[in-house]
Length: 418
Image 1: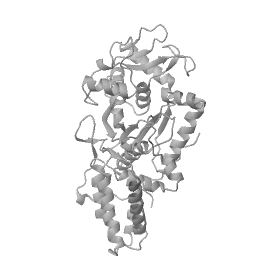
Image 2: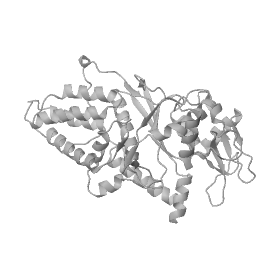
Image 3: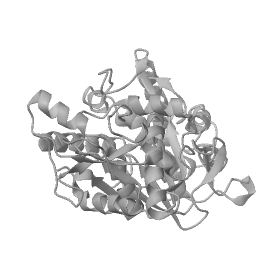
Image 4: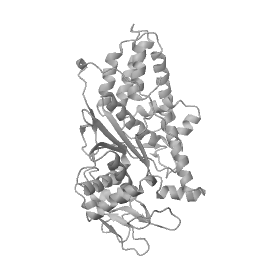
C-alpha cells in the first residue's frame, strides 16, 4: 500500500503584536451557527476529518474538504499549537462491496487501489497527512468494545428479524440529540434516507435509530464478535477511531456538509452515551461542489477527478489555488474557468516571489493571518497576496528579503509551493 509521505511546512516569524491579530482561530460552526473560537489557545488541537469510502477516485468535492481543513491545520500550527489529526477510511461498506461486485474485483484489492490513489492525490495537493489514518477493518475490536459500552448503557437492541437480527443504537434518546445539525424530525428523516440511513427498516424501535453492527450476509465480509458474526455500521467506526486516538471532547470534527446529519449527529450521540461527555467541541462543514448543475457525487457519476486533471498536465498547485479561491462554507460549481484563473494567479505569484526585491512582507502577512484566523477566509487571503504580487510586478518596493518571506509564508499558511 502506498505510504502517505510527510509534508514539510516552513516555520515563519510571528506577526508583531502591533497589528492586533486574533490569537485564536474562529469558525462559523454548524452546531453553534455563529463565529466561535475553535481549538485551545495553547497546547493540543484535536482534528478529526471523516475520510473516504474507497470505491472510486478522489473528486474535486473531496479535495475541497481536505484542502479546506488542511488550512485549519496549518493556521493552528502557525499559532504554535500541536495538532493531532485523525482520519478514517471506510474500507468495508455497502458502496465498496457493490462496486466490487459490479466490476468483478476483489473488494480488498479495490479498496487498496483507491486508497493508494487518494493518498497520491493528497500528496500532490500538499495536504499534511493525518497522524492516524485508520481503516475500519483494522479496528473491529475497538468498534465491538464501544458497542458493548452502549449495550451496558441499555442503548442498543437487535431488530426482530429471524434472518438478520442487526444491532441498532437508540440515537434519538441520546442527550443533546439534534444539537449538531439543528434539524427537526421531518428534516432528519429525509436526510437519514438520503445519506445512508434506513428509516423504513422493519423492526426498528424508532426510524432514526442507526445501525451499529450488521449481521453477516452471504458473500459479505464478516468478523466474529460478542455481538455475533458481522461488520460495523458506518457511524460507530468514526466514533471509535476518534475516541481512541483524540480522546473525549477534542477540538473539531469536520467534513462535507452532507455529513452533519446523520453521520456527525450519530457520532456525537454514540459518544455521549458511551462516555458521558461531549464527542467534539465543534463541528465544521464545507459547502457542496457541483458540476453541470448537480452536486458532484460518485453515485451520479458527475465527477471531476484530481488525478485526471493532474494527468492532463495541470499543476497540482493550480488545483489547490482553485479550491482556496472558494470560501469553505460556500456551495460552488467547478468550471474550467476556475482553473484558468488559478493558473494566472499562480504564474503571477511565482514571478513575484522570484523578483529581486519587493514591498515589505509583514503588513501583507498580517492581513493574510487575520483572514485565515477569521473563519478561514481563504478568498481574502488570496486577494491580499494578489495585491502584493501586483505591486512587486509593477516594480514597487526595495525589500530584498520580502519575496523569500512571502514564498515561505504562502507555503506555510496556504500549502502552495512557489
